[in-house]
Length: 232
Length: 387
Image (tube, rainbow over all chains, first blue to last red; front, top):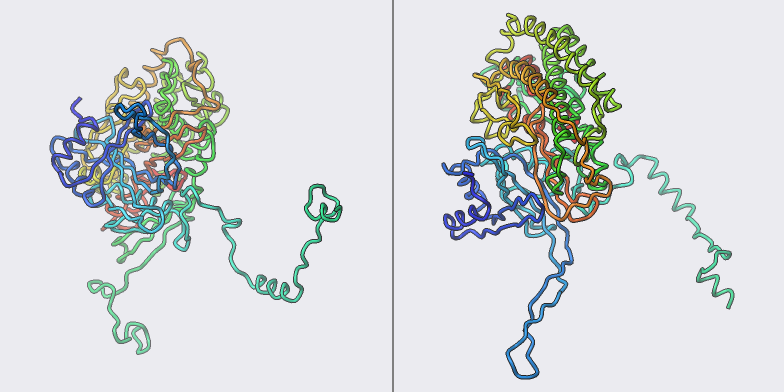
């Protein structure tokens, strides 16, 4: 197979770009499509290299997926040295520790080579610092134009801002829409098409004139705190 | 027009377009226009009749398909994939079950693979047949070629309805095979149809259209797409091959059993609208060849892997991107599993949307009438573009 495995590709990139922070993202499924996590500062340089290098020629960026990873409690096995009461060498005890993994947003790029006719994708990952305010990653649209609409879609549905994108606007939701529906913590509004009408001001006036009386507690229902008070 | 009060006489007014001594016209085409093939909108800027800027506007059919799938089990998403591209629901099914099979490591029996090829190529015939008809409708040949196409499509849909219970929303593929088996009688009738009615349709449509003088004048050298731009912009399917790039996922990935069939990949020379039309005509001939070979070689056996678990499927945590060659281009699914019964992330790679990336490049400098034809040759279905 003329194509490099992710491990070899990572070694090649680490050699070419010694200052870049690159990491292998292991995939545990039977497909074993391992990816490479790029650091934002070097993403465009590395991507351009992958596209133009005559041995690789990853000229076709097929798919861009947005992903939302909220804050998550994960259990990590830690190796804790414990002193031996008998005075021997420290024993290593493995202990499961719960850790909070801070949330982030992610864009995953699937690359192929049309020229070399590769059939296994090369997977690139770009991650934001968090989900709230630092949600910018560099756009790879200048490298592969096929990312143009897909990055716009991710900007729209996940809220990742792609710096360097030529035309970063919402793609599917309307321009005045505020939220990002594909995020895991997105709450649907009761009525998407609600808009203020004159009736609402009339309703508000009526409510100040006739304040809503608080509901009378139901004394017959069992287990009610107030019901218990009456009994005692 | 140029009275002292109008906008042209105001201080600081800059003429929009000097050369023409007039205004550019901003025209919003769609979303409810028959020639945009659905609720698709183009904001075109016209200089006289010539397009100088064109921005597509999406989202009128958006229902967040991908979010819906996150709330469903893996099995329950198969009917939703029918609704992406209603002209080729069988290949959508196939792309999705192919991705799930790769994610969960499921095997597919040989007979099911052959039947999938037959049904997938049948979907390609239906799609290309419709495209040729609708493209000619966009040219103004009102309904004659389209109705010949729809007549053959109905015959194929009758076969599909008999098999799956539905004309277009087939919901027929399952993880590890198909929902039901296909009878020998059905296959014989499919073969008879391909040998007689459909072969005649291809001959007639070819004689009617391919050398037609008006069609040549309207399609040749219109909307030229260079191979370099096509690859750069991620164009796939017949549109990429019309630009002369030899890239067919059936040949490249050889997913399923596509390495066993003898078929050719037609390639265009110029990348114009005529080549895109010809790609569809030639691919139909190749698809017929593939179906006949598959019917000839069809083995006996299971149509569904008896060990495959469809209900309550819980793939191990991991992710997988898998793609097939759909009639419109590369349709792929990226699935991320966290080990639960619902996908953590379900992403559709929509060929129609990504093929529209170059719509503006192809239309610049052409007339508005050409724009409609170029859009028709891209072959979009809005259910897939907007998802």
